[in-house]
Image 1 (spheres, rainbow, N blue to C red):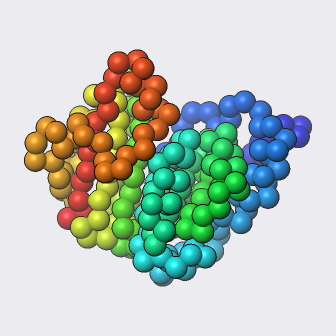
Image 2 (cartoon, one colour):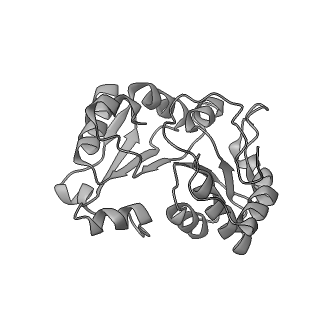
Length: 235
């Protein structure tokens, strides 16, 4: 293995498909990532604490999970906006994780923990009814019908969400792909543990409060696509 290659993953994955690496990390990026990520990464070889608030050096009263944070725009924005909430960010793409870790090196936050592999591993590790929210924004849409089974929203993953979310806590989903929006609505309705919170069309056409946007959303807008913002409550 050369010094530019990423180590082979030891854990098997269930719900992650696609590439993990983009451009080779710059030496400074790699150095910061190698130094800081081990300090922030969840250790799934140990049992999860019964109280997730103990995972954070900051004193927090809630814990939220963001799956596939991409460039980290929303995760960093929310963590700075809500210093009394703890945030677990999961992102298997090496370059995205490195970008976020560099941002945290430059502007440290004490209420973020990270995981750089398959989110289902974190979901299976978490205790029952331990999360105050789950965010899944602009996930890979797998637009070809033969690949729809790879979409992260599935009955099995909704089972996972239902187990770890506290009653009344939100699952938020955003996408610019109509078929994935409809897919998510149908799957959540069929599951039964999630109630869609929209009352009018404006509710799902309007971004979330203080929404910072993401680079994927900006790309969608440039290409003429409009995002949909769905909120479900754990029944």
